[in-house]
Image (cartoon, rainbow, N blue to C red; front, side):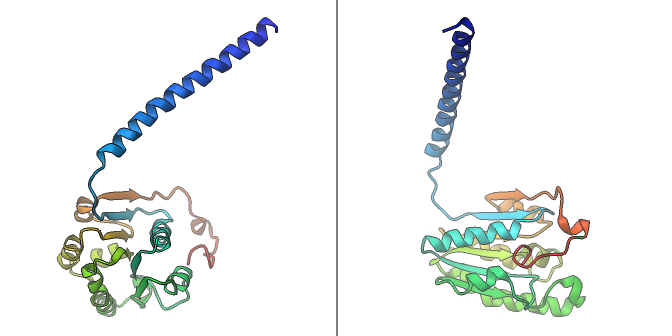
Length: 210
């Protein structure tokens, strides 16, 4: 074996050793965090920001939950009566209760009284979910708009969330989540818009946007 080959092998062994040491340190950190996470209760997740993927993330979690045999409640605000892919599949799965506001985008209806009435109606239809300990997850899709436009009573919504069963989880999606929501949340993710096809004139696609 040449000196060059010996040097190469030594460098490879040193690189492997450094990697093993880094991964060992990382494992110790992760294991320590896992050991400290001893609290068992449901959490409130807020998915906000101007990027695409907030609702998709929430619906993915709903599928995950249903896949484990848990019950899920989903409430869609700002949605119309049109065919919606996630609703089509999820509302037909065992254990999933689905509610839709049904009036469409507020910038299309341009009728705040109608939107407020629809929001209050769908909220009254889903309030029982927050009292049912068998519901593992509630998804409140686009709820932030309802609160920001004052279509729903902020205090009533917060009280329902805070007084829910101990092991129940809630996901709120929508742009512009206010501080009072992020303050009570356990997990907050802000989806940033780096690029969006729609801004470049590309038409929204069935199966991708809805």
